[in-house]
Length: 431
Image 1 (tube, one colour):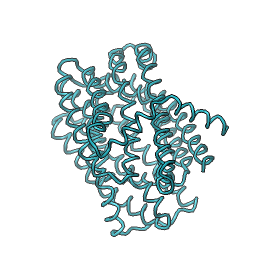
Image 2: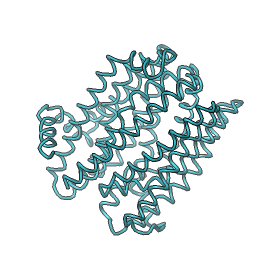
Image 3: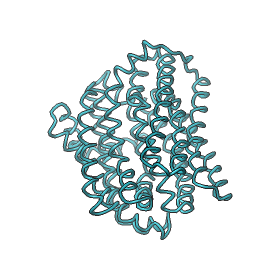
């Protein structure tokens, strides 16, 4: 099992590194070509679609790995039903996204068209649910390869757009191509590696939703305090400041693949330990917190010190307004990833019902902070709001809310340098 975990993580990290390099190069060139204004429109629309994502997924993203681990003989029925449910919900979400933008941005035909095209990605993200079956089997090399192929195809497509100097509308289609390619490849590989025949069972669907429903509102609330800032900046200040803010957040996301690889690999291992060994289960959670803390602090310190030259190097002098935003916003990543690890513990403890209250409180705090700080400090105010919101939601609430207080004990214990030293020593020993 340990060898499988390391091999699985290696595949994820290796492919994600290549993806990130491709995405970084093409993304930076695209941002330079579009300019802060058009780049701000794309970011604004992507945030609108991001709001719909948790509704489309219906909380299944957070529970499918556990479903596969607990019921391996029902995998085909579980996966087929989950995909079907998500396809149905994605259609309603696409209609909702376009209707919202048509109402709020009435008369902005190009923005509405960009939203309509961009929202098509929701349909293919529904079929991307197959990746959670691969995660449960520690076979993440297949989703990683699929994503790498998709990124490469999209990169070629964007190069074509840049060479031929296409309008912003054409760039909105790139996201659709990305998820379409990934979904097709994953379903094909699923069948090739011996996955069960996909079937639909509405009784199974009812059971899935009864366990995943607790994640719908919490996930939506997470999206609110992850994306409200861009929407509010666009509506309160304009597209240019939205472009600055989005470029800063993109810089922060350069290393997100590493965090995703570590957490996605640890999730099934932690949940499996919960079934057999409580002490090992808690130990693995503490180790994951410790790793996340060290990684995120290293990134936050580095990007704070190098914010201006980093933005200048990647985006050019036209985007220098993003440097101050980056130096502030990068400090939210530690607390943001704490929330992801906490959700694994909540799932293992079957305490999903508490997520709604936690994340509603966080979403309300974020909106109020943005309303107060954006008029005062512009996009930098939104950056401050993000940091405070993540700290409040993923740390402070844990101390004042008894049902999840034990999770904060794990956070505190993970800050012991001996924990991370032990993890590093074990990894070197296995090599």
